[in-house]
Amino acid sequence: MQEACYTCRRRHVQCDRSGNPCRKCETAGLKCLDKRPIRWVQGVAIRGAMRGRSHQNDLVSANPVATLDFRQGTSGKPLEPLEQSASNELVPTIPPSSIPVSLKDKPLTKLDPSAQYYLDYYNDRICQLFIVYDSVNNPFRSLIPLALNDSVLLDAVLALAARHRANFEQPFSTTSNNALTISPAADREALRFKYRAIQGLSTSLGAGNSYRDTTVASVFLLVFLDLLESGCDRWNYHLEGAKTLMALTPNQDPGRTVERIRRFIIKQLHLIEALGATFVRPDLLSKSSSVEESYTLLEDVVEESFLGCPEFILTAVQLFSLQRDIIARNDASNRSPTEDITSVLDAVRDFDCRTWASTLPRESVKHDINDLTRLAKAYQLGGILYGQRVIDAAQKSQTSQMSATSELIQVINLLQHTNLLKCTLWPITVGGLECQAQPERDMLIQALEKFWQDTKCLNVTNAANILQDYWRKIDSGPNVANDWIFEMGRSSHDWLLI
Image (cartoon, rainbow, N blue to C red; front, side, top):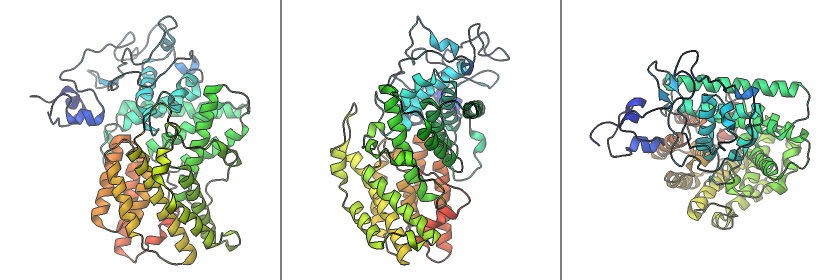
């Protein structure tokens, strides 16, 4: 390639001119174009008051449309970026064949161009982001037909897509100096869709109507929206709301697709609750019977899992965090004997990650046993580090965990070369809070930067800030490495670092 590609020029980044596609475009998941493409724009005008308007277009929130059949990989190629017009506005360009639509029904004509773009973006990007392995049974993609008949759920879906798009061009940084590099148009759209989703939920809940599965799904998606926005201070309200609604939703025969989505949401609520409780104030999260009563649903299926953490390790971590809360309250009457906690920790140490990975149900995706073994190992080692610190707090002791920490960092380093790094923010954070050696700390920051490039979730940059602040603290004062299980909960925010 002799000249910088058009895509890099439009993004205002330096093209490496390595080939077609160039490495910058390939890494960003963008189509590498050598010149400005011809652009077809829906509506009667490209900009101004009539931009995006057509004679048959109405806002989707007022006109839910018929169910569509969405399948994995509908576009077959990376989604086109937002196109910049002569007035420097970002105008959505809709890939004409990215969403399979019956030409006779034309259901998407009731969506405005912006909604069409972000719905396709959700289908193409978001659905594969928040799942271990994308598949034809991806539960996030199964929400799309439901969203097309429910304006609140649709707005939550579109808010996720627009927020991810707004974050897309922001570089990895541990400071706030790059806040203005987000896409202004996508940022406005993200705020608009989020506002409409929350207002719609408020109206629905205030009306006192019977709650539907789509209402639960809408609240559930707001947790993931918070991961993209910051990962602090709002997710727990959404989590508690989803748990409450799950208990209130009538348990009727919903049909096979909705039942599968319901099972998926229950499993992910359990996962978010178990890992989310480890870095927050004691007793912040309620003990939900609706989730606890559903343990029969919690089998490990990585095509239906956000993070792929083995259920056995997840349950152990939840027990450790509950004991941490009891210790923090200084409630000796409810504290489990140290021998019981040690017994659980020994069981985590004995967990066979290879056997777990080898015996997972196989649905429609070929699993890489080695990668899944490393993913399980990352959570196993993270659980060991966390559990040992809980025991140390109970015994007022301090155990050296340098060996387990180094092993965890090595596993994370290997996962950087896979698509599963996006599942490991919790183990990365635990390993970082234990890490003492500067070279290993540098490796973890490198992994977080790669994590950011893969996900564009702002809780990743916040995790990097947390680790660097903690390292400065322990390097400048007495060794408090065994206190981080409480220190995280004493911070000014309640973090969801998953």
